Image 1 (cartoon, rainbow, N blue to C red):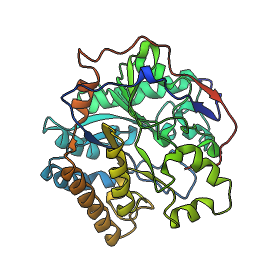
Image 2: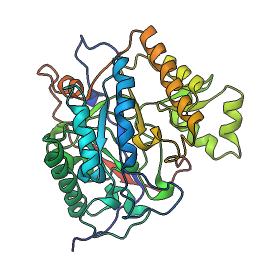
Image 3: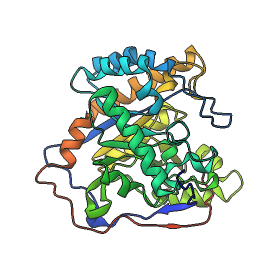
Image 4: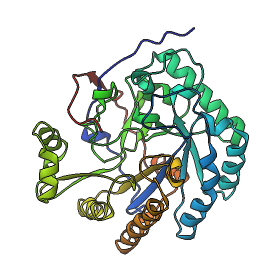
Length: 361
């Protein structure tokens, strides 16, 4: 049995300016849509190894067609239940047959062998696992994806954004070229997870020999005090009702680029801010079970599902009006590793063990 010792409260250090990715000049401003493609489970209940149902995957073709009609390629980051269940394998094979759709990896440790750890909040963050166990689970999901879809995954997102001190090096050893696990400005130390408070929205080189690119999930701060960023968000969290009051007064909001729990008007304002700031890549995300009512807290009924698509209609219209083009996972891989875009030879991204911060999600 592998050792399962855990690491807690890991803060990912801010990258230095020299490690930021300089995108190819002809790329322009782009947006990516990366979907956490996973099993269904009760988000309000303790995690269980038995929660492996993937019935929501059957709804993906209709959603996929909706985005395809609007010219938006999708990147599906699939986890072990999806990559090992015959019905979901068949669906995903149909989606990637277009030659544009990209398959990457999503790791939920509690449903990915080997099952040597005790299932719980801390071990749900893969980066908390002992290196040998985290590596073994990465091997298991990687091998399952190759067997199911005939592709070697090169884009990764940890479930629950659970990167740890060993994760990037382990990914690089397995041929991954892009990680998109870091959620800019978010902190999960209250649950035993990582702290991304020092991580901004710009892509950067990381890992051994700076061989990998980190594409953080985009988080934008809006309002008249928006320049206060993660530091102000943290400070407001220490004031009773501080964040809610600042939001209601139009002073400050933290907006992640996702249709899940982020109102359309807030997302549109955030996109305008991001583009005015010159952000070259906007990284959107959501969970695959969200497209079937009742599987996540974000879409509970048909009305919520209609709002989900209305959110995307509004977002895509704004992006088109601002000349922002979509980009596939395949093109991201090509762009980040173009010959003219050689990575700088820099030490691995570091981090430190820290105390819990007040912003947990």
